[in-house]
Length: 301
Image 1: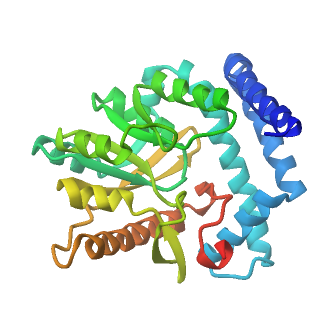
Image 2 (image 1 turned 120 degrees about the horizontal axis):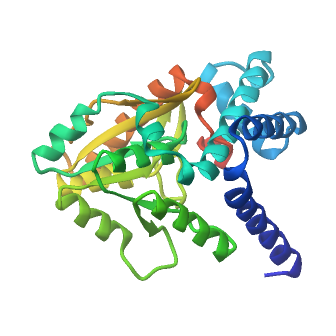
């Protein structure tokens, strides 16, 4: 690693360390105003991430990226995205009562019913709303969960994220850089009748499954569906959004294993159904989809 890269990584680590120490102790109103200003300034600069966000949102709306509606929506999406970061810094000190009472969720009874039957549950989510809060809410309901963390640079920053999510009660598995079989551990948890939560609207491996997503080919990870096929766990899409002073969530209906064809074909079919559920949730709350990276094949190529 070059000296410039090391300095950049150290700066990022210091910035996040400041967030977890200073921001969580600020008055909430002041913190919200600060992060809203950061969102608006980032949006106004229209850097690479914002431009990609607008390309993604244009596909959701079905209009050209130059359409004025896309630019207006991207501003709201950046405000939503910075709200996620603000809450990430403050969630460890948020009261349990607020975490629980602020959640407006529909369809959760499916999770309890399936777990009561002794089956595991794969909860698959897009980058929407605040999935850390949703996980904390689930833990406070007495349901342990296991999830996977993308390895970040520098290592100290990755360790901060792991420590943060472990403080919320999550079991964290690193996606890479470990001699532990991530798929094997997740499958074991599911066979034990537990919950596995996976963010699944962006392929990090370059080996994802091609699906139709908002009318165009995109790549999504096949892991959630493959785990369900392997372990007979239930695959449940969950979409999230923000409400004025709280959080909204919808547990969609279970995606059934088609039962026909080999595992690869069944996994592909279930991943397409997952993409359809994500599209339904994102269409309902497009400003709360924080996708600043490439998803569609056209962009990836």
